Each structure stands twice: as structure tokens, then as C-alpha cells.
Length: 468
Image (spheres, rainbow, N blue to C red):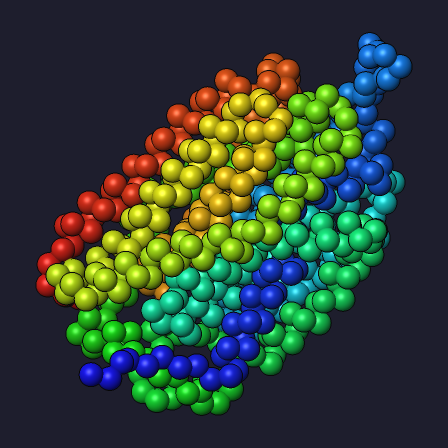
């Protein structure tokens, strides 16, 4: 029996590689926040807010960085919120105006932001409140447009989607490499600005003006907006006409129980990640007793570990794709149940990884933070890659941009709790987040409800293949 074939033209492979390099190199600067704050502090941003403490240790006067840290935390909170909040309108733009319009908006926001940061100084530090949100919104819009490249890879679709999300998280390593080579803050962001040409090239040379459909149109060729492309699909990837999804309105999916529980799952885990990243520099400063050299070492290690997100994220897709094929071969599940069942182990494993990360971060021991960094990278890679893959499998592609945007917007509202929590840690808790961490560990346990509910839904859908 002949093996099913799946081949891609050179242009499609080039688009996949181009999008991967784009996500890896340039669009996830916010993930490098801990490293960025360390560099910005050396450039004396908001240094006027620092006050010397009234007591001495030996011959060294300890400085109170509380007000400075709060300012940076506020910038991070605003940028993180806008990163999520603007995903819904940008997702709507992507769904309705398609690739070219969405990417041109992303290029404008990204380039304006990088140029603004490049020409700021300690005297104009307030411009960071404008530049960082623009930078993150442009970056997430690039990610949304690139995720559809996974549609070209059929049975490996989830692996490609999770790989791109991991590359987005790993892009912080580029900033670290530049800084370690002695490249200044201004030169680094001018470098990012110049590479907007890269984004323009991908927009007009490789990606179509419209969308990349999924499943791809059957037959030896699909007639794209830039001409025919030879795409051969395996029989398992060719949709049966009797099993086409009946497309409901966007709001019917937005108010579904499946969406609600997934939102809860993402919001709780994401809040914990925001708290950990936003307070990392302050936590390391406390544990290192204000020694800037030690803080710099740990900050660099943290940034280096972020690079490995691109290696960890595909594990999630490699877990989902084979499971989906296995359920397809069983033939006892409907099409929608096959997609859902393949996500259950991923959701559960992500919650388990985040629980381990929360437990390690709750222990105020400096060397243990190395383990915390590793778990943070793996759990974050699984979280965002799994989120994107789940949304593509559990909801119709026609609404992907809006569904992805809405879940990010609503989770952004939850993430606003980050700033008052940070203030609570710096104030009443006196930089001791132990009790708060214990509470967040308990909240993390609630996220295990989601995979169990999805599994229950799969069991209810079990039966002969039917209209999904």
C-alpha cells in the first residue's frame, strides 16, 4: 500500500523558515523584560526615584530601589495588558482585512516603538510608557499572522504552531547577545528598527495577501492570490464533505463553556507568570542583598534560559499531533472529538509544569532560582504554544483571529492584578512574597479542572464520525 504523501513547494518552506526567524529574532522583546530592566537601570532610567536607606552595612550605603522598581513594574504591566487587550482588535483586522493590512500595521507599530526606545534617555524615560505597549502590540500581530503557516503542514500543524510560539518567547536571547557583545541600548533598538525591512520582505514576497486556509483545498494545486501552489495532502488530511463543520456565529463560541474554562486556565497561569517576570529583578535584588553583580549574573542566566523556549515548545505539538492521528485511526471518535482529545494531555502537563514552577519560586533560596528559570521557560512555552494550538483545534479557523484575541483580552484584564499584587509584596509583605506564593500555588491547582472537563466532553462526543 502506498504511503500517503505530503509535499510542499519551495516557497512554502521558505515562508515557514522566514516566519520562524521572524518570531525568533525580533518580535518578542517584552519576554526579555528582566534583562531589559537590568540594562535600562545601568543607563540611569528613573534613578532619581532611588533613595539611600538610613542604615549602613560596613562602608556601603544600601539604596532603596522600591520607587524605581514600581515604575518599571507599571511599564511592564501596561505593556503586558496592551499586548493582550489589543489582540482582539488586531485579530479582527486579521480575520477581515487579512495578511497584508495586518502586517503593515504591525510594521508601523514595531518600527515606531523601536525608534522611540532607541532615542530615549534617562531624561525622557517616560516615553517607555508609550513605546513598550506599541512594541508588544506590533509583535503579537506578527505572531498571529505567522501562526497560519502551520496550516501548510497538515498532520504536523500543532508542532509548527507551538514551535512559532516558542520562538517568540526565545527572542529575548537576541537582546542579551547584543548586550553581551557591548552593543548599547540605542544601537540594539536601531538594529531592530533596520530589520523592519525583513518584515516587509516576508509580507510582500512570501505570504499571501489573504489567508492560508485549513484544511488546504483538495487537489494537486491550490490557486493562491500569488498563483498556483503544489500542495499534496495525505488522505487523512483531506476533509470528507459530510464532515465539514457547520460554522456558527463568533459569539456562540465566545459564550461556550469550553471557551470559559479555557479562559480560566490561561488567565490563572498567565497571571502567575506575569508576577514572576515582573518582580524577578526585585526578587533577585533582595535575595542577593543588593549586590548588582550577582543580580546581573542571575539575570543573564534567566535570559539565556529563555532561548531554549524554542526547543521546548515543539514538545507540546509533538505530543498533540501523534495523538490526533491515533484517534483518527481508531475511527470511534467524531472529528471534533479527535481534535479535543489530542489536547487533553497537553493541558494537564502544562498545569503540572506551572505547579512545579510555582512551588520552586515560592522558596526564597537564591541557587534554587536556576531551577525556577528552567521550569518557567518550559511551562511558558507549553502555555502559549498549547493555547494557540488548542484554539485552532477547538474552534473554527474562520474565527481564529477573534477567538485568539478575545481570550487574550479577557486574560489581560485578569493580569491587571499583577500591579496591585506587586505593590502588596513591596509594601505590607516587605518584599517577602511567601504567603502570596502559597495562595497562587493553590490557585494553580484549580487549572487542572480544565483538562478534566475537556476529557469529559470528548467522552460525550465518542461515537461514529459525524458532523463536527
